[in-house]
Length: 260
Ligand SMILES: [Zn+2]
Ligand SMILES: [Zn+2]
Image 1 (cartoon, rainbow, N blue to C red):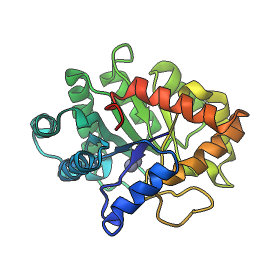
Image 2: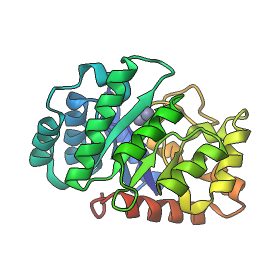
Image 3: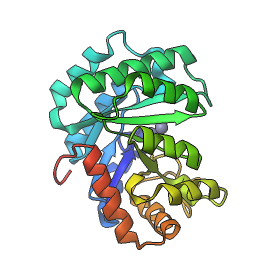
C-alpha cells in the first residue's frame, strides 16, 4: 500500500521517525512519497528519502510562494542532480486562497513556473488547491498538457463537478486522505463514489488531517489503512481492491523506485 502524499521529513516526526516508519511497514505501507513544500524543505524530503528508502518530491507550496527563489528551475535541477531517481514529482504546487499566506498573483506565477518546469523535465505533478478552483483550472488550461503530463490533485475535498473537471479534462487523479472519514464529509464521499476507483489514490498528508479514529492527533502513514477502509465502503468493494487500484494508479502517475 502506497501513501502517495506524506511529510515524514517534518519536524513532527523528529523524535520517533524510525519507529513511525516501522509502524507504517507493519500496517502494510510499502512505499511513501514524502512531499516538499519549499526548496529547503524539498532538500530535507530528499535526504529523508535517501536515508529511509522513500520517494520524494520537490516543490513550492502556495503558502511559500512569496519566498520562492528567482530561479526555480535551477534550484530544482540542483536537487535532482544530487538525489536522482529519489525525486519522483514536482510539488506540492498550486493555489490556496483560503489562507492567502502568499499574494494570489505570486501564487499564480510560482505555479506557472512549476508547471513549465515539470513539462520541460517530463515529471509528474502533485497539486494543492483550496478555494481557488476557477483560477487553478485556468492555470492548468494555460500550462498543463493533459496529453503528455500526469498528476494528482492531493487532499481533494471538492464536489463531484470539480472532480469531473480534474479527471475528465485533465486526466488527473484525486488524492483522498483522512477527510473522507469525517462525519461531515458526505459530499466528498459522494464525489469519490462518482469518480470511481480509476481516479483515486490514497494519501495521509501526515502529520496533518488524521483520519477517524485518530482525528485531531498527529497523523502518520500507518493510518492510511483507515482511509482505505472508508473508501472501500464508499465504493462497495473490499479493502484489498482499493489499495491495489490506488497503488496501480499511483505507479502509473509517479515513477516510484521499485521497493521504495
Ligand atoms: Zn497540500
Ligand atoms: Zn501536503
